[in-house]
Image (tube, rainbow, N blue to C red; front, side, top):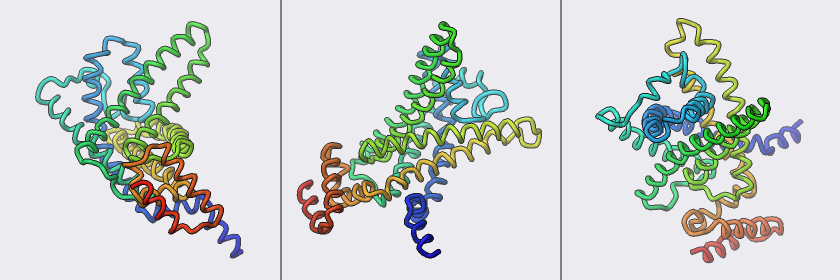
Length: 321
């Protein structure tokens, strides 16, 4: 029994969960959830104001964007949701209300990316990346804008594919393509968050697989949240607060999934080697992805051959300074 228990404790999932717990994952996820919730409504207000001014005349694209957002965040937009479609599409950034909303999104979006970066890097036991504060904040804003751009582009692609599928009489193909596009959208957003939000220069194989796993988990979570919202939206006692509560719960699970996925990467040999390389000489700031991969391969080869880790790290540190 004891050998079996030790084997279980050494298993990959258990080690990942221990890393998530030891690095205060639940606490970090709560902070990320709060910041995401605060930035969500201001972001939608400003984003739709800009979208309506530029592309709002395209009815099909507008409906696709609304459908994409409502399917991504159950209970946010639509009948019984936290936001009314007509009020959202009628938003404008002209006037004091628009100016305040625009300022709010700048502050809250940057804060959300900053808090998320702390959580992402904590899974690898890393502190803040060595970077100019102003450039770091501008990068955070770029990540937030990139997420919005991905939503619009994916919605446009969805309109094109569904129109083509309907023209060919392949309605089922449109639904399949819609699911695939949503999966790619979620994967792209997670990659954007991990790489440019968290400033994690992990090998593509590990980070893409982690992002794809998150995207699949999001699809399951969306289905459960939709079922929960459908069960309570007709309840007069819960209708007033159901949407907000479900969104908070949904965001909380999303943030925990992101951190747990990185914890799975962090406890692998590649993840541990990445942490040591960052600590040795600032891989985040000084190494290209190709150089980082080369050093990771050298560390892994040294491990397999049973070499002296301390001597190897000193040699790598001298090389990358």
